[in-house]
Every structure is written in structure tokens, then in C-alpha cells.
Amino acid sequence: MHYNPRGPEQRALRQILAENLSKTRSELAEEDVYLPRFVWRELEAIIDCGVVDKGFVRVVCGACKHERIVGFSCKGRAVCSSCVGRKMNELSLHLFDHVVPDVPLRQFVLTLPVPLRILVARDKRLLSAVRTVFLRAVKGFICKKARDAYPSKVFLPAGFCVVQRFGSALQLAPHLHAVLFDGAYREDEAGKLHFVAAPALTPAERLTLVTRIASRVERLLERRGLREPSDDGALQLELLAMKVPASLPVIDAAPDASAVRGFNLHTSTRISALDERGRLRLFRYVLRPAIAQDRLRYDGGVVTFQMKRVFSDGTSVLHFTPQSFIRRIAMLVPAPRQHEITYTGLLAANAKHRNDIVRVPTHRRIARVDGNAAAGAASKATHGPEAPRAPSSTMPWAELLKRTFAFDVLHCEHCGGRARVVAAITNRPVVEKILAHLRNKERQSPAAPRAPPATFARQQTSLL
Image (cartoon, rainbow, N blue to C red; front, side, top):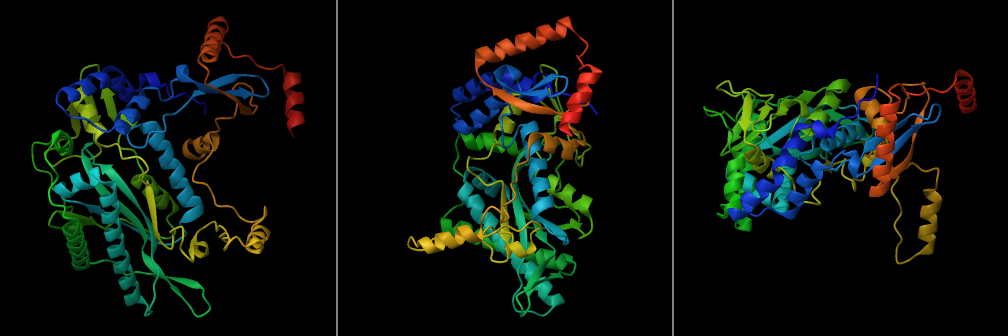
């Protein structure tokens, strides 16, 4: 398979932002609606994402010297389909390869009442507190279910939680996806952990759980004195971004979900311990971007978004003006320094038995006490170069493409040699000079150059 550059200039999202972002910002300013600077920074960065005129990386084949250039990404956290899609695949593979063991998993999805959605969308500390309440209730419930299957005083749950700010219609709808082990660990007398699977949930138990979560969250809001969000221009923009353009009411509660006072809990998604494809698919689902590139169209005047979900009135395609579309996606950008994924239970970073359950154990460093040099020396001796290192959630560009799309981007399609990254070019005059040279080279010689057979054979032999 050949490598095809993504061509960011032809992407619908970039065209919409490049033509209408400044106009939308001016319109909001005239309406006295001012969004945080991090929102505009992320949207503006998408315009330059992958554009080689702003800088690039040079990848050159060591055999035939065929050169390829790759533009820099914007590293967007919410809206950019390419960058969020990269993070989705990176983190999903990290969870699959290094973190989550072969145990059954269950997904708990909690949606919130509309007034609370606005509050948590504005306040990341409140969102963190609601997430803590949610996880504590679910973990306690799982431990109780495991205790029903095996009598033990102490059970240790594990899992992670992801916050999604968007709904299927690109509306602002903060909700929580918790992927927890469908069971818990017990510790025997020798200190060894044993997994105990939890029995299946009943509708009555799910209703009890969502009622407990709703009551605890409501008490949290009362303690903090939070009632309704203040009425301002940003509130009206948020309410508009929350609307679902369907002619008939959309039923939030699915047949396999329970709803109490606006809180909706969905628990039917379960992945067995042996279903590797299902596990990876679940990880990608909870980490997916808000906008799928192949579902967005732009004809210069109307933005068309093809939804994956069909509403009760048969609506499956949404139409926006460019300005209303930008206003909508601007609400989906999270605040800076907000965790994308939160590990809980035995998967938490400071959990005592984390290394006993994860796929790739990592060492725990010995902290210095009162400047004790002996403790530092012991730590260095215990955790030297041969000690295991924490696996990184980031993955090299070529390896990620190979794992995601099943082709090797560093394999030269012209001669079969291996390419390598030789430089990152950011200086504007140098960028323009190299691009002019490459474009002139393409015009003069459409056919790609190949190394002579004898030369290529010697090069291949020297690499072995």
C-alpha cells in the first residue's frame, strides 16, 4: 500500500475555518460574547495543521534518495479530526498493549441534566468532583457485586474514565464514559491478587445505582451552593450549542438504560476477557474525536454533517451555516490542563498493587528521605539501566501508522528501501526554497528516480 498525504488544504473543516473564523469572531464580539483565548487558539491552529508551507519534516529514502515531506500537526485536543484521531489510536494501543489485562470490561455511561452540563462545561473543578462521585459510586457497586459472588472483606476495583463533551449531533453534552473491570480483585493471605468476576446487572440494580449517583451529585451541588448558571452571552451560546436540530423529541433514555431526575446511566456494553478486538474497539470509541472527516461536507455556503445515529423523526443529516457550525464546535474545546483520561482503583498511578495487574509492570522509585544519600544510592542501584521503564502512551509516527492502517510509511514504494527522518524544517525562507525545488523537480521529472540495480544491491547488502 502506498502512502497518500492527507492533503489538509482540501479538508472541509479547514476550509470552513479558513473562510469564516474571523467573521464569526467579529460577530460574537458585536454581540458582546467573548470566548476564552484557548478556544480561538485551537481553532486557528487547525487552519495550519498539516500545511507544509508552515514547516515540515523531511523523510528521505536511504537507497534511492526519494524524498517525502510531512507537515506539522496542530496537536488539537477536541475538534481537529486528524490530531484527535492520532491521540485516539495512540492511547487505545497503549491501553491495549501496556495497561489493561485480560479481564472482562463493562462501560458505564453517565449523562447529566442540562443545567449541570452547562456548569461542568464551564468549571473543570466541578467536573472533576462530579467524576469522583460517579466513580466512587460505581466502584462501590462493583465491589458489592463481586462480594455477592465470593465472600471477602476487601475487594479492589480498577478502570479508567474519559470525559466526552460532544453528542452525536455535535451538540455540547458533557458526559462520562467509565470503563471498569467487570469484577474486582481480592488479596489472599500470601498477598497475591485474584480476580473475581461480578454477576450481571439487573434493571433494578441499575436504577438503584443511578439514583445513588443522582443523590450524591445533588448533595455536592448543594454544598457548593450551585444552582443555575448565570445568564450571560456565553450561556446563550452554550444553550444554542446544546440544541439538537430534530423536529421530534429525542428520547435520551435507551431501553437498556435507567434515568432519574435527568441523570441517565447506560451499562449494557460488556467486553469479555478473550475479546481482544472488542476491547480495542471500546477504547477507540470512548476516545474518538467529535468530528469524523468523512461525515463532514462543505460546498462554500452550507455545512453538511452526516450523523451515525438516526433520530426518532428519521433525521440523519444536519445542515448548518458556516458561522453557526463554528459557534457550535467552539463550545467543544476543553479548558487547558484538563486530563483526557483518569485512571482509578488499581490502575491509578499511586496504587499499591498496580504493577501486579497491568500488562507491563513499571518500577516504583525509592524517594529520598531528609536528603539521605544512602536512600538515593539504593534507589539508583535498584532501578538502574536494566530496570523496566514506564511505557509511554506516545508512539512514533511511523509505528502508529503501521499499527493503525497496516502499512509501513517508511517503506519506499519506489525502490523498496527504508526511509528515515533527516530534518525538521521551520525556517520560513528554507521552507520556501525546498518547496520550490521539489515542485520544480516534479514538473521536470514526473517519474520517480530509482537507484541503479548494482548500487541498490550493494546498499541493501550493507544494511544486512
